[in-house]
Length: 182
Ligand code: HEC
Image (cartoon, rainbow, N blue to C red; front, side, top):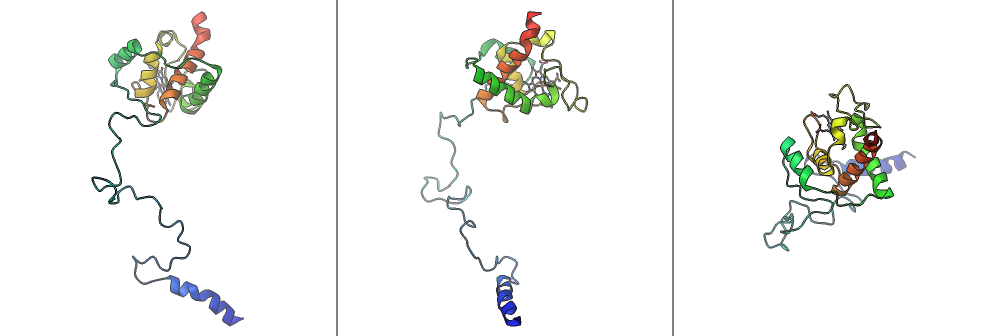
């Protein structure tokens, strides 16, 4: 019995090494080394010898769209004048907007947009999305606020896809609808 235990433990002795930079004996190396090139490795297939390449000119990454507006009130107003929602409102787009709202905005702005989300008052009070002032905001202006942020509100251009931000604008409009009629 003792001999069997010794034999079973024998690999442990050989799997270690005094040399810190030696990884020891490798068993099943399938997932240790990646099949694709490492991002920062040299690459003889590329003209400049690098694996990582800049995106080709005049291309846009999937799900991204350039947004040539700066931060601040003037730029928000300019976006408000110049931008239109390129996506038609459908049942699906509105549902998607609601989903995005739930995940990214509700925390501060609350389920109905009243500015009473679970993070309030730990975070400075956001204005009511259905208040008189914000009812006047055009789609482009809302899109600008969501994309670049506004005052204390952080920007969401990096977290939320271009299309979803426009669906979100539709959802904010939807929250505002009943208050517009009053
Ligand atoms: C971390 C909390 C927080 C989150 C998340 C957040 N907001 Fe805000 N929002 C604020 C605060 C605070 C203000 C007021 C900012 C100020 O005026 O300084 C604000 C302002 C606004 C305004 C009005 C801006 C103006 O011109 O007065 C709109 C519209 C708005 N938010 C929409 C959204 C939408 C849509 C989302 C979801 C993507 C969102 N917010 C996510 C906190 C938040």
